[in-house]
Image (tube, rainbow, N blue to C red; front, side, top):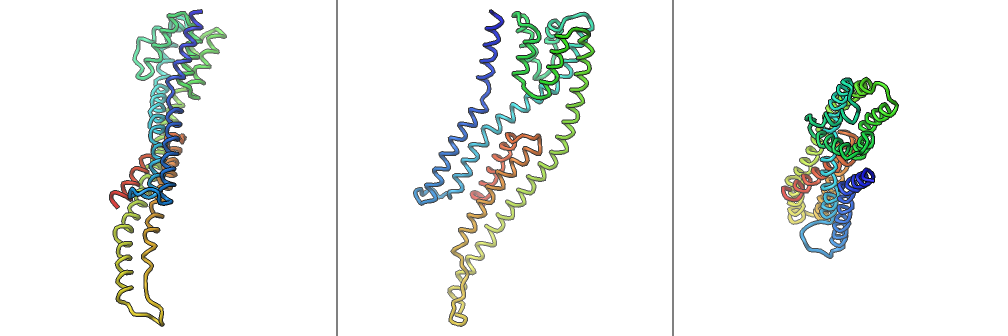
Length: 299
């Protein structure tokens, strides 16, 4: 009875600690509000000095920022836990060679230092002290750190323990496999980080080009249009003029293109970096912020 109650409390705690969906919903609501303000601004109902695309950009930032940074923080935390998992499995295997059971090996290993993995091991040891079987404690650990690597490694450990035999050898093989997987993943991450830098550089060049056009070329076009319309003679009865009244629309198109590039390039950077759109939201927020500052405050 006490074991079942402890398991129910653990499951409830897991549901309460996952704030990613809540942040995504709140961000979506805020984005909808900003888009609504953008629609009102587009039809002339607001006089704030901002364009409708600015409201849309701020809405995208509200959607991407909190969810993206929180998801990235959780992802990095899980990655740090995964990086210490081979060391934990190796120490548990050593305990098994000294005749300890899986539960005893986990309790002894909980005294070690494994970075962010240490609290999870201590929680498993506490659950075992409360009478929870070692396999159930490991399953709860899988629910807390639910990644393909953790699930694959720990599932093998559970099956080996339930089947009996020499669990220490199985743990050694699992630890070796986990270490090789982490090395391959780190190499891929280092290689992909180069492409992320390229995306940021390309976006910075694009933003600098728009800044140069807005600060030098387009103002000169307005001056030239005004001067020609005042001083130039008619040619064949047709007045010579430059349509400088379309320049604000051109500048608006520039801002729209910056917002589209920032949002799309950010998602692409996140997918290239670690294959996650959530991490791309973080990059999108950063690029949108840089783009708004570059086109509105600086430009």
